[in-house]
Image (cartoon, rainbow, N blue to C red; front, side):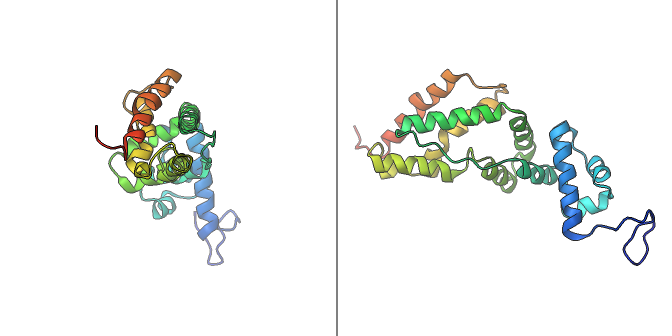
Length: 206
């Protein structure tokens, strides 16, 4: 459609530029993602829905995956880690919250995006940071409280140790393809893997 030098399209509508156009594209991507999931997200559909052309979309997001992640980040909300008063209670409740989230429609989108991101660490980091599950910060907060209560030694405050329970839960969804993890699996992760690992850090050798 031809546009005149004053920035108006042939239909008389004002042409959107900059932040306004980017917001419209992102809003269209969010709508497509929630309606069709990542599998149904296409640059064509987003451009049509936003009332623009594919070039405008590609100039801002070079591929479907980066656009999908940007849209997902608009949908996800940060959640604070629980504070039940015990390390076991905190870890188990955090896993249960994550399990409910990963089993939800929004969690299904996250699983699709994580699978598509594959070995791209910068994209995986964006997803994990936004979803909060395998982000290091909340887990170190939980462990820090446990150290303050005397339930764990300071040596337990290691990023890989902190997040191992959530990594195991994520594997249930990503590698095993389960729709939701049974609660006894969560309890097993906590009691058989996480707590022995944490309590063994800093303990004198047998």
